[in-house]
Image (cartoon, rainbow, N blue to C red):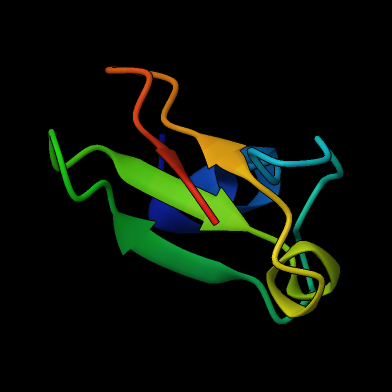
Length: 59
């Protein structure tokens, strides 16, 4: 899968919306290093997220 296809397939880990074409944040999980993707709305509202790989929860 190409990088652009991966971006289109990504969803916010907090609310589940498709993040293609949005100002989403992508970062590594502090515990395991897995990729976390969050939409701008969830980041602004400080909604909790859970790492899909290790279960780490953050603000």
